[in-house]
Image (cartoon, rainbow, N blue to C red; front, side, top):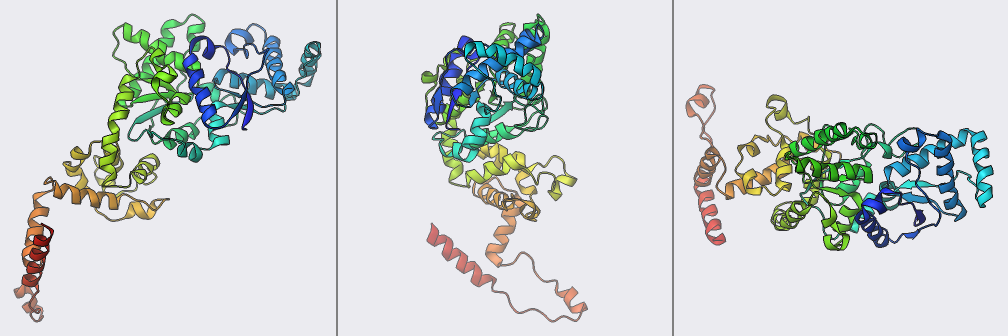
Length: 444
């Protein structure tokens, strides 16, 4: 959809107008024609409304959707709760025709009718399915190269199924694909699919809500993430506002939180000031400062490697468990070494003996779905390590022997004689040594 109605919901305009601002910027930059319709109310929220009166829940959702249908549009919402409410109502009223007729009889009094055939889309879904990750990536002028970003989907972007069918409800990947398209390194983590727990605050379970936030934030910090990206205002509230509450209580948690549209807008060149990022309760300055500092690291790494291939390799990791060395030495994790390069730890990697454990057997390349593999990367790392003077002494000594003699070993004449083998012709070691010496002098 290029033209649609937008449904902001209650939470974003009331509490997080900076999310609205960033989302509007993204809509504009991607050429969307967005309509804001008069007459919308709360979607309504499920816990507070549906538990009181299910009929009110479905009638309110149907009325909101009927307003969109009357305008002849589909609807896009940046709120997981609104998305789930609309999808659930659409699914339920498609089968409960008696309730649908009853609601439509009431809606007719307001010159409305709910048909239920409109397209209901989440903002993240719109980016993924209507825009596409590759097109989105092409619009990015300031990629998030080397930034380690984790994704929190939130329950209602994916469930309940089958009413919601956008991505796998237990193992989603599509928001990660969007973040990867922005140039970031996507970080997987144990509690990715854990509910944010924000709904507990609405029913007076404050400590339980904070416990949910604390658990995920500690997991994220343990995975060395630079930021958490969310796609729901309630989840944003949990990890920004409630994280700030934990910080005030002197708890050691510090994970900058960004709504997806904020990340996209930054990548498209919009400034933090333009979007009001200073309105976050947990400062995003550490993220922004690190992002800026990575530009020099990227320039240096780009002079050595194809950075896009390194990023693709890290985000794929299909061959991670196939490396022969990993099978006998679990401490050797080649993808982690590449991740460190993307984090800017170039000198540290070149000095790490782990680089030399790559056998250059090309197993990874043969198994790589993109025919990239890691062997060529590790060969280059070895060359750079030798140039930096951090390679193994054995390699330096062997090279000196080769450069002066043209050989890495001399024939065992006694063994050859015992087997009846004649002496080999004289080697060209001295000639090669002169050649290499002349070549080296020419280079100098």
